[in-house]
Length: 210
Ligand code: ADP
Ligand code: MG
Image (cartoon, rainbow, N blue to C red; front, side, top):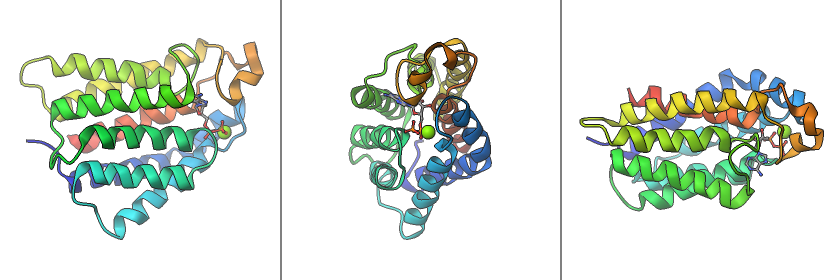
């Protein structure tokens, strides 16, 4: 059994709730090594995603993600809006017009999302960005999907755990992309806000899938 369009819409509502809950924390993280707008940017974006879903949930999971993508791209400023927008858009394209998201589709969508972010932002592993949470998440999802009898909740739980560890790993890194890279060595010792938001997002998706 996979996840339908309404299931994906509910998961995005859950993401919006978690982003709202952690708005201040994301602002603080971004204040330390950026300009302090990350929590506000994302909260505004996901609030608009919920508004768009309230107006009508599209028919397929891919169309739901595409609606989220276009909303994030148009409503979220800064680096993160277009990057998360690209992630959702690539995931949407990867799902195509499937009526349900099953394990293989979810794993492929996650991988497509990371590839999109990397194509757009040119960040690689170790640059202290959201990519440092996304890459391990996609790899963990792929690995989890190989186990017998694993379901969507299991795959997303593995991705979420790996994203959390990946986000923590950014503390010791020197930023090489984005605003934090202007600080050079002084960016060390701080958690990357985008890596943190990625881990929150995947945690919300994993919880929604349970
Ligand atoms: P801005 O830096 O424009 O203020 P945000 O504060 O919303 O945008 O987002 C900052 C986050 O965006 C960073 O913490 C980092 O994770 C992510 N980021 C910035 N540049 C890149 C990039 N080139 N590739 C991937 N992620 C990036
Ligand atoms: Mg910022």
